[in-house]
Image 1 (cartoon, helix red, strand yellow):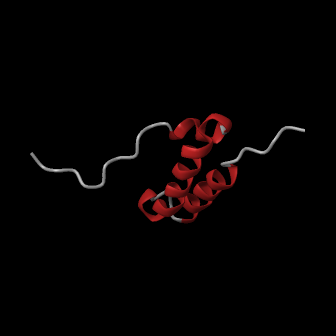
Image 2 (image 1 turned 120 degrees about the vertical axis):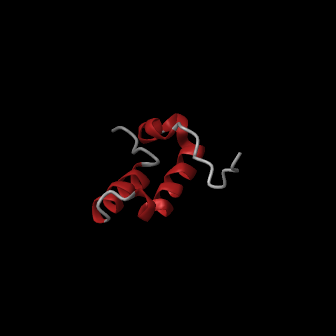
Length: 64
């Protein structure tokens, strides 16, 4: 029997949150952060992390 994806719980939480909040990512920042943390640890073992390889956008961008 295949092993369960270690970040599947977080991936499902993101989908549930987005659906409940009309796909407004700003309302799901906490669950997205949880997914990023999981992917930092399990990226090589989680198919769910394949879409989370982009770096997290900087929150405090300086203006030039």
